[in-house]
Length: 380
Image (cartoon, rainbow, N blue to C red):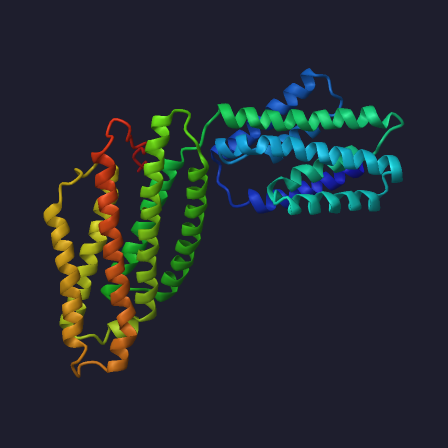
């Protein structure tokens, strides 16, 4: 009874942090499938308390195939350590609540020391399940529950390996495109002075959160491994591409933040400077959209050398316009200097775009037989 209550509390704690903000998708489906498989296997093996296998399967599901492969041994090792500690302490001191608490503390400390914090919940659950309500035949009781946990872990591992592998490339591209669209829309609204600042502030927070999630997804994509060496070479090139895509998106977000912070200065810029700024940024953001479409195959690679030259010319025009007017009396010198970081960010953004465009062109030029883009159109 004790183990069930404590396990339920830990279950609620972890699910609140892990699943509360998730939408119904592949990982949730895999979790349900792993739990179901664990229950059926436990029933087939005629274990009396099959729910413990289900609980272990829930904690063992991973967001990627590679992470599942790398963690399977850690999970088994953690369960063995937890089982040994649980049996030792119950044999020596009984199963009083303070004894369970000491074992939990030891398990957490050991895994923190080993820098394996992500398997702490499963290890703690194993100890609690084994130490809860021991019978006279404690060693058989502990062995049964340990085996139930192992059944759950391997059920989750099998589901991770065989069903619904995550399409990180597809997710990355569409999430990047959606964030870029949002940022570019706000930049254009700011340049035309048509912004509702309350809504902008809320959306900026959403954009920041989305980029953090995007970088987490990118980390999962980096961890994946292809079975065939040719595919792995192609995937490594894509990693370089997506890293630059994220970096470019970050730079666009920096421009949005800087424009929003200096909007009062933008209102006071000389008309020719404001018009140049608007035209150049509109061209750069269109360039960004064009590069993303090029990766999808909707724009021909290396079809825009003249376009690239135009981008370089626009960078020079922006600097020339700013330098020409910053010495005039149309705006206070300090305000010019206050606005200068915005110009610097725009120039950096253009450089990142040019580098991204070069990478995309290179991706479709060299080793073309292996460079397949695994991105499907977003549903309308």
